[in-house]
Amino acid sequence: MKRLLLVLIFTTTVLLAQTKQLVWPPPPDVAKIKFEYFITKPTDIGIQKGMISKIWDFFAGKKEKMFVKPFGLHVDNNGRIFVTDTGANSLFILDKKRNTSLTIEGSNDQRFASPIDVTSDSNGNIYVSDSVLRYIFVFDKKGNFIKTIGKDHNLHRPIGIGVNNSLKRLYVVDAVMGNIQVFTLSGKFIKTIGKRGKGKSEFNKPTYIAIAPNGNLIVSDSMNQRIQILDQDGKFILEFGKIGDSMGSFANPRGVALDALGNIFTTDTTFNAIQIFNPKGELLLVLGRYGIKEGEFAIPEDIAITRNGYIYVADSNNMRIQVFKLLKHKTKK
Image 1: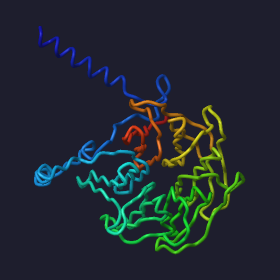
Image 2: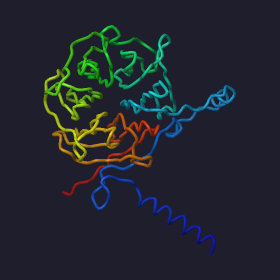
Image 3: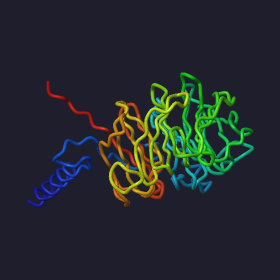
Image 4: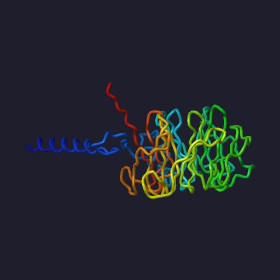
């Protein structure tokens, strides 16, 4: 009888866990997104060190490094997760496929002062913006330092960065200057897009940028409380959003990312939420609120979406990455 009771309790617990899966929108609406898991350190996604490394770390007094203030996010086509951390002044690279993790703290000559955003190109080279040092670090795919970009070009506060692989261009958002500066991937300056202001292709403290498959630039124009979409050369296409406290408006939009359908995901560090818009700028869904539980945020900074629909959010003040999954639905014929 006691054994049967234990089995019933276990079965009920499993069923409750399954029925309480956290999804958006909640029932009775058809769920579009579900919560998956947190990442606070490499072992959270199954990355384990070998026995020799563990023994060495034990005698050296080393502990597994955890996120302090995750900021910028990027996931490459091989599934490697890149996280800049302004609290640890480091770049974390997590590679679940190869069961490896790497922490980069800068070059041999210069440590990071404030690593903000991270991206990579089709060759696997890694680009990291540093808002205090005011230039871009470039590393090869193994994490070896190669060079800097923009060091002699008078960048004032580089924040978001994005790569157009077809054009071999690096776009750098300068929050202080209110513009986007464009370089070749070899580091040669090409031109500046935009200026400070409130008009089309003008910016007030812009922060992050996403590059669409067609080359369009999606820019969080943070202190103008809007998202601007420009073509690859900087020509204005569309804007949406306004200051406010209702759904569809913004207080401080930051990270931007695109899903496979071209929908635009935007974090807001004041609302502690993610808002999702279609390519025309029409609101589709809002996810999150302030807190420490699943689907709750404390200063969500950057966001990245993979080809297979996983959503990574830098939940900065909660010292973690939250991972969600876009759900696919079959349509009736």
